[in-house]
Amino acid sequence: MLMYGRQAFAAAGKRRFWGGLVLEAVGGGAGLSDKLFELSAAAGAELRYGSKAVSLVNDRSGRITGLVAKGRDGLSEIRARSVVLACGGFEANAEMRARYLGPNWELAKVRGTRFNTGGGINMALEAGAAAHSHWSGCHAVAWDLNAPAFGNRRIGDLYQKHSYPFGIVVNVNGERFIDEGADFRNYTYARYGREILRQPQRAAFQIFDAKAQPLLRDEYRVPQVTKATAKTVRELAAALGVDEDGLEDTVRSFNSAVQPGAFDPSRLDGKRTLGIVPPKSNWALPLDEPPYTGYAVTCGITFTFGGLHIDEHARVLDTEDRPIPGLFAAGELVGGLFYHNYAGGSGLMAGAVFGRRAGLSAAGA
Image (cartoon, rainbow, N blue to C red; front, side, top):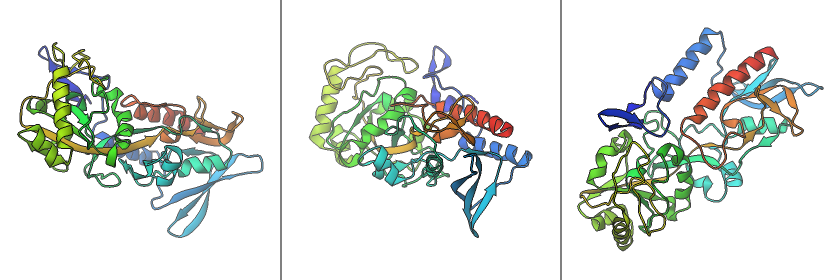
């Protein structure tokens, strides 16, 4: 279905989609999952709840012949002609985040499930698979400061705050630290979470004036939002716990740097600032119409970029680039797809494509 609520603006009497991402699954993530479970049941798949894979099983030739699972009744061995690993990255593993992503990543909030702890990756590595891709990289976004440590399925992704291109983003000192208008949101949001994590107290504040409010996405209007509204910039800073002089100076300098030009949220409009660092390259409007509203955010990690090396058939490769017989992989535990940044929606597409490839390859193995 078309993403009118999240990806379109009115322009010349029409709804114009921006940034390249225009489709989503009917019902969002829950709808997509429900459909996949429905198709699995129709195909006769057996689902084992409360059961966790702990290791792979191989024969003397090195072929994967099944796995060991831990359930309510202890350990059991499940034999299979082939195994497909599709159990996510290590984003919910604080120790692995600190080891591979770096300092303070153990303190980041997790947008999704608490169960993506890198188990599938580690099982495959122990079986001789090759580690691949950008192990110090991840997808991380602006996430509500007071969101829970892990995702809440009832709230879904509404803790995210992705309308920052239409305001400014500051830290607790009231200082800007990113180019909010560097590109369409779909091409910057997944790397700006890392920038927030680098700030004092791992916190940032998205600041908007009254004229920007109609441009904000629905996630800014949910009850579970950390925000403050005030008649002046100084009062807003006090309410948010931001340095008052710092925010006043930043807004004053930003407003003075805004260049003339037509504002158009449906395209890269080139309406920019001049003479300040960092610049704002598009959608630069002065913050001069009260009331002012600030939204407090932190870093929310979505998934990790490092993972397993696969070929075009989704076969897992060993450290000598040879397929490990009987072992396939898809989804977020696959390495080699993303480096440093991420384009919105591409992870779902990669999961669908390689999931299909892995299933077909495993069935024919």
